[in-house]
Length: 208
Image (cartoon, rainbow, N blue to C red; front, side, top):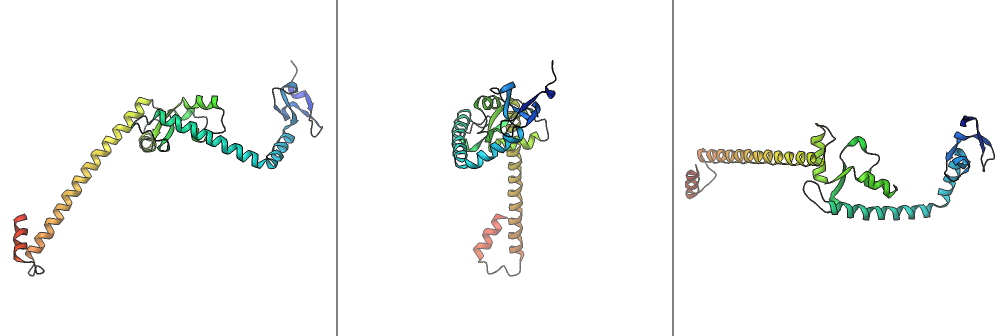
């Protein structure tokens, strides 16, 4: 078999004879290559994009709108894996295995639908709150978790947070009551309790 690096092809723009590796692949072209060399092809694309700026912006806008509709419908249908939140603006895509991610699904409006659906199969839908909780915990663990493990990690963390908040609230209430009682004692033992009437002092004494 001949070495392809020795074969050449003439560019249709600059008319120069160049090696095959200087041409991009193209199924419909001669030898399966583009008719323009890489340098001329890049210049042609740059010029076309500059001349058709309005068309490109309109096309991108339409693609973003279509992706947003598809994304919102997909997320609201699936709902959050943990808490079942279904409002699309509160939901995000989470890759189960971080190493398998090919691209960011949240802004993939330029990706072909077949490739996009294949990437979505690697993801779970989580609300922003559960997604943040999971990443805080998973940063201390392994990231590659199944759907069941994700639910367990987030729920266990939420239970722990509720317990800690309950303990903090009780401690705060106890501290507040102590400070309140201390202020009352100081008022009662002060030589001039600020003109408190007799019945008010009696009420304070009953409290203590």
